[in-house]
Image 1 (spheres, rainbow over the protein chains, first blue to last red):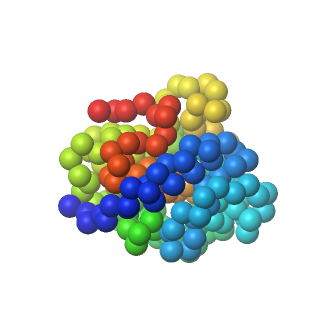
Image 2 (image 1 turned 90 degrees about the vertical axis):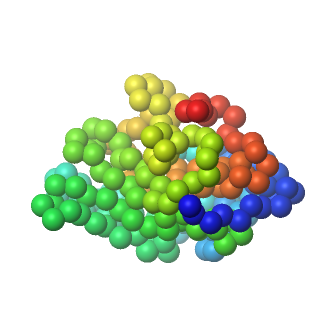
Length: 63
Length: 137
């Protein structure tokens, strides 16, 4: 089985709240390069802006 | 998958998720294509996943497969290792409908990343943080 380290209750609650408030195409869940959740952030329009933010059902299609 | 679409898929994946070092794989005959990568999560947790293209892609969406075993009772999984992430036949965009003309496997990585955060929250406090998701349990 994969080895997963549970989060502290406070930290898990913070992430739960961030996920609940980042459920649109314009407001996303922000995270760092190492995978730490940074709360919510607007979903930008350029690839660089969007690299570390995930909106709900965040389409990304290269034209 | 036609060559033009494959080029677009690759470009989208690398543009958005190059930090995860995604690897595009195929079987010996070339009939199956998939991406492999390790998602990075809170607290140093990692989740290896595979995003498989179906034979009728892009008409049907990719399958997101977890490449490690998960704790018993993990919700929002299909057949034990596939993330439950869209509603087949749903017609409203805000209800998780796959859009063949707009979506790529790169979008699936974002879906998987959110699933991974939700999983870690569930693992820690026993609550899945996405209220309208349908449990497959």
